[in-house]
Length: 154
Image 1: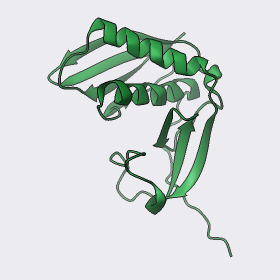
Image 2 (image 1 turned 90 degrees about the horizontal axis):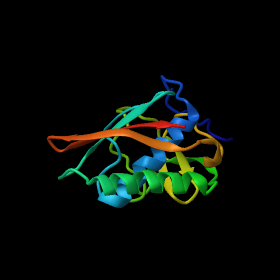
Image 3 (image 1 turned 60 degrees about the vertical axis):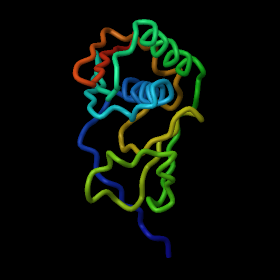
Image 4 (image 1 turned 120 degrees about the vertical axis):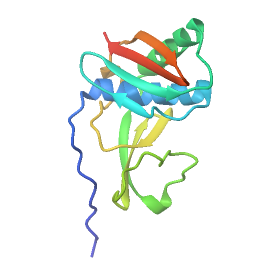
């Protein structure tokens, strides 16, 4: 007899294109700066923000590179898919498990953006990055080791 899989409930309905763009931004930041995924995020339809711990402020050129890379990934028309995986089988070197809430279910929902990103997430996403639109960094600031990026989709 198959065991029923129980996932944690999600308390918010995201705007799928923006939430999917956040995944791509997070992976881009990890790849470019070696930092963790955003430690604080506010994702909304009109504009969003993500905070990252960085040892120094990025240059304007680096921020333009972030925007360009996110848009390059979006334009790649990558499939966005999910897979249910027992937590014990998730490699913590590949999937950051640090932000999981206490009491999280033993089965995790992994969200894949092609082969560019994978993370545990219960949110809503597009089916293909072509549905996202153009990613635009509105502004960014750096204060006491934290980079805040404000962005929108156009």
